[in-house]
Length: 452
Figure (cartoon, rainbow, N blue to C red):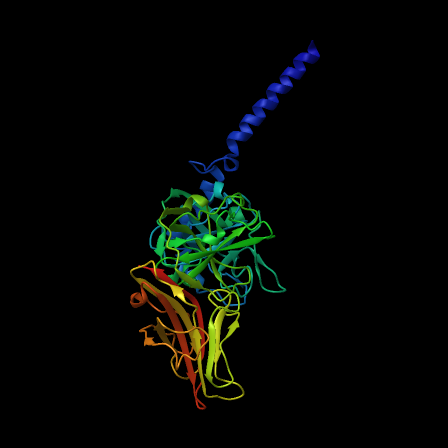
């Protein structure tokens, strides 16, 4: 009987201990409505130092002025920064990191924070106001050269990569206030996205997933770490990339390809730092509630454009594929070969059927470098594929915006009215010319024709 009583007492103690532990460890299960005593003390102490002038509260933009590219820089000044959490690891799409932005609405600057802590959304939830005491922390990049400016606790002396704040560093440097704001996504068209938006919560407007992805999940099951899905713009010729972790909880969720709409998330960089991408906080931020805007014709030059006519009138150089598209591959032409050469080369679409429409719009993108003649764009309704375009077909020059400035800057053509071909076939031609004294290099990508 005594043994039974001892067992019962032990069970009561265990249950009570479990209950107390569950109540204290609120960060494991839900976003707390109040802060713990230690956290309150740390934040109160930091705010008092800011108020007295012992610590200077800087803007995110001011803090980023400490960044030196390719370097890990220790912050030695008595400074702090405040921001609002823009990313969430609740779905597993971020890992031991989160971004902060300088305002819940119309943000202008951001920082990436890396820390040795998982499930940070329980403590640093979206919109949470966060203070960071920066002295003795490091500013740099987690993958040196990727241009994603990051705050961490240490650095790798081999390659200067920023490393996470340790578990012991976090309580002394990272504080949340009791304030959680509602973030308003910054609305952008795909062609407006720049590196200045890295870390921001944005909403991509008038977009859709390619119809060829119908039935496919967010994550390609053959990928090991990160998986990319293309995003199409319905408003211009731009394309973008949705990148997701293969460890995300939504990896088997089917992409919504039955409509167009908006995608909200965090602008980021690929691991190698080469491409801008968007990362989701949640698939609920993907809203496809409009009718699709599938083009009548689209060419991204991922294959060797074998259905096009590649006609050289003059010169040995011809249009060819290269790997510097926007993104992926593109069509490129240069008259330079151990010196400037005289060339006239046409790259002409296959027949684009406009028999079922009353109007259509052409869009594309170009990039250019080196001095030379400006690329010209023409349309025809009676060209014979494969023939000499200078002797076959009636060609009308189109008023398009063409890249200039010798900078490889991808430039949108603008919306070009090709409705004159409605009811029949449309041919679009890119005419390149060079001389023995000047030869630009031109790249063309993302050619689309959409019904009005």
